[in-house]
Length: 406
Image 1 (cartoon, rainbow, N blue to C red):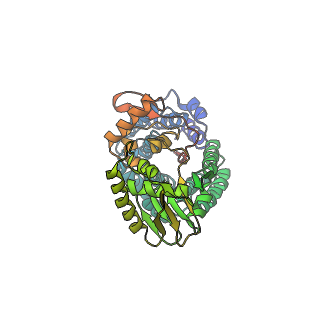
Image 2 (image 1 turned 90 degrees about the horizontal axis):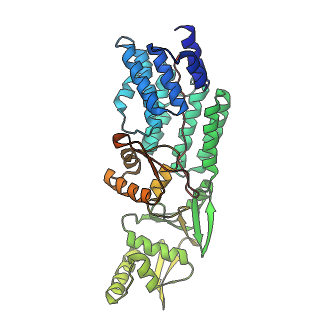
Image 3 (image 1 turned 180 degrees about the vertical axis):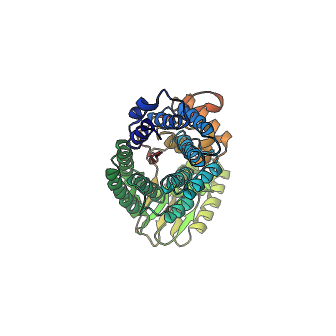
């Protein structure tokens, strides 16, 4: 490489995209196109970055396999930043194999971390944890060690393992200091803020309070009967029952959990569980049937008994009953939390991340757009959606990765 290409690459590694562009902005050769693409990605112009990287891949030709592989890895990074989660993972995996076969272990590891980040975004936590466990970070530079620990923290957050996440964040902070890349340090700081933000809301005896992630972890391992409205389960320290697919039963359990130790009037239960506006004998008969089903499902966890005005839930092995719920509850709250990460999402990417059909996502987006809660950018296949961070929504961790080209 000539001196300008080398200097531009070093500027990018140090997180100085403008310094890199000063050296190669007017050049059209393949290395310059690749570096310009990475610089534009760091500056946030992802569409232009994608064009430049594809041009660089073509310009390098078939014989320059390592350079082409690096461009493919960089393009995958841009796609991830643009929340294009349907990019061809086979091409990225082939590029990783090529880089590893030619001794470029740093960029090969970077390619692996891109795939792990994609899996984390779409919620495949088992695969994320397995791939992280298989990574040997002892020989990696500080920037990639930072990425590894941020991914470890992200997986731990989704497992509600607050202590593991905090330990990983401390290692990420130390590695980021060694890396001396301002943008990377800023991402670690942003991840700390997300980790220290309230994660859930606790309802107990008519009173509410906010919980941090560590508080949630402690709660779920305590001797308390928890009606978990986030995951649709009822659990104590010994057992867990899922009611996610039985919304009527869960609505009954939640109503009685929120009222504990008091009972809940029958009319209120009918309203909460069935949405009944006009109550007749058929509603009351159905309530008795659903109460019997819930009593049977809860088994040894709690006793469900009738009172003069309604029903009361009494813990058997636990000392009290609490309800764990989201900070803000509203329709399409999960989608708003996803969009509030500050990135632009396509409807297909949201469908993949939330495990829903694209048509379901599009209907929800239309409602949110009509309410002024989301904004659109682009048109047709380039249409993207974004929402500014909203108070009360815990966003996903932002997981950065460097783009080294040497």
